[in-house]
Length: 70
Image (cartoon, rainbow, N blue to C red; front, side, top):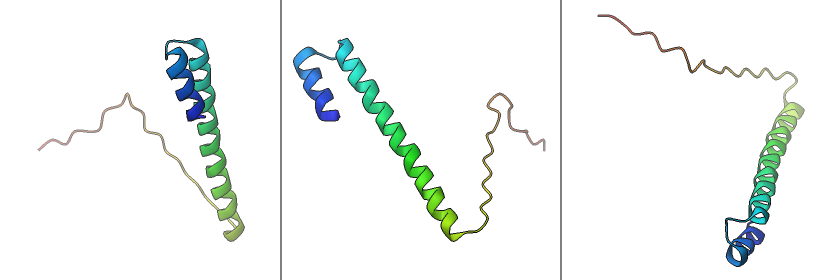
């Protein structure tokens, strides 16, 4: 897909709707590949482990860390 994008960029320029669409498709395919890889790894791990507990904690970016007073 990058070869197609490079060809479009060279022949039509990067300021073109066709280049923008090809770049969007390329990025979408890359993200889909990462999602499939993560799913496959978790599925494979599930074949070996009977119970898998996964905890993801997202910190609140607004709150500031506590400051320690001396």
